Image (cartoon, rainbow, N blue to C red; front, side):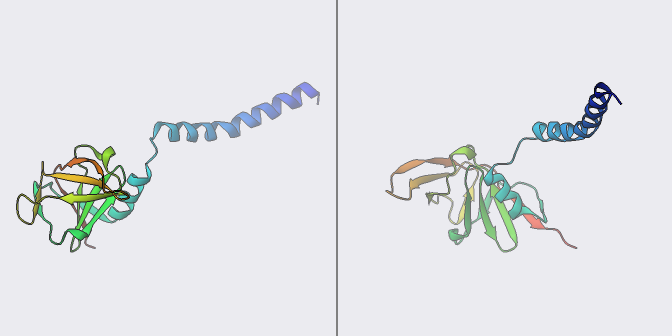
Length: 141
């Protein structure tokens, strides 16, 4: 075999093997990567299904909140996880302290505001405005 034929065959073989890899990379590029917060939320919600969103939930005691950085607030009530993405999820910082002013007793409702305080110095760090709460319950089975 001539050197030209050997090189051409090697190039053809390489093209055959590289095509599926390139297609897989294209598929990955088309799918946006999950943020760390989105991955944490997905892990928390694994095996659960979303229910109908609700305007208000009972939140007593409030230490059942999990703050997921740049993603959502999650409140655990028994076996139900209530997820609120707020009107500005990028402002959610798991290093901040949530200061909740309760205007409706033990309920938290859509459009309620949560003040954020810097954990290190207690300085004002922003305000979160709540959206609907989406319940996630374990799948029976």
